[in-house]
Length: 189
Image (cartoon, rainbow, N blue to C red):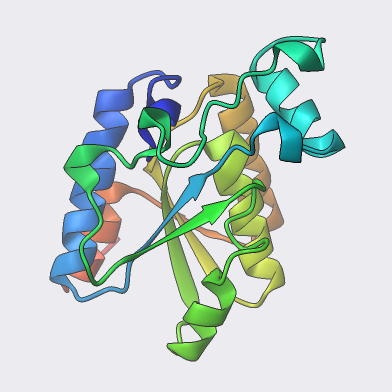
């Protein structure tokens, strides 16, 4: 839920609101919460994949024109102010699409005895789907709060969600059911 990413998604205010409600419910239920954010590298540290990804996102064929959007301490790197992490919550920076690759996320979850991980935020087709699949590969039960997941490309996001449903690795839910479950109001459906 970075400022720079939210600027690029449709219905950003709606998604920020949904994520805010999911976050409030998780905090009220005492659920451990972790934020991840994408970090760009300065061009001097970018390798082939970092350049390829930046070029694709910035719609350019020329590596010389790449402008790192999410450099540490830049405005775009920040978490949306209305979702500010609390002192009891961690922020893990990543240079990959999966929240688990090269971050301490899996270690922290295992150390706390956590076996299920809920995902809300952006972007479904870029960071959430790879993180959900990685979570399943690591033995966690991924839960996707689908209507609290934004996207940059609606068709790609729909394909991502359809693929996750098809594979059966993830529990797909919505904000209302997820927050009600956290509040102890188990649905009868």
